[in-house]
Length: 100
Image 1 (cartoon, one colour):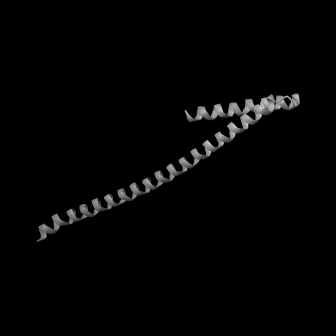
Image 2 (cartoon, rainbow, N blue to C red; image 1 turned 90 degrees about the vertical axis):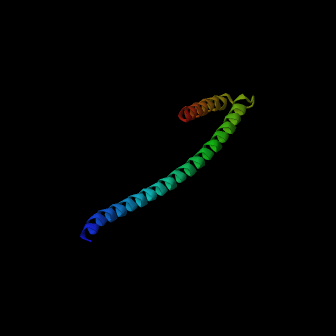
Image 3 (cartoon, rainbow, N blue to C red; image 1 turned 45 degrees about the vertical axis):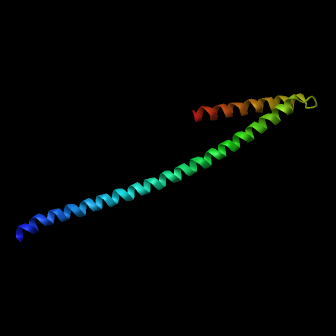
């Protein structure tokens, strides 16, 4: 009987340790999965925002192009619109570099 207690106690401790390790590993995996899902959702939202900004930039670029080329627009306004258009293009190019 005494020999069975000596052999059984380490086995029970080992079993409890293995169960605790498995449970904590499972909880860490669930936590990591939730964090990844949150990160993916934030990434999707940011990409939608980026696309909306790209559309706004394209519309602004078209408006500035139209403004700068219209004959009734004073020269200084047309030059300012051209400079702004160049700034918009630089920003778009920087964004494209960041995406790559």
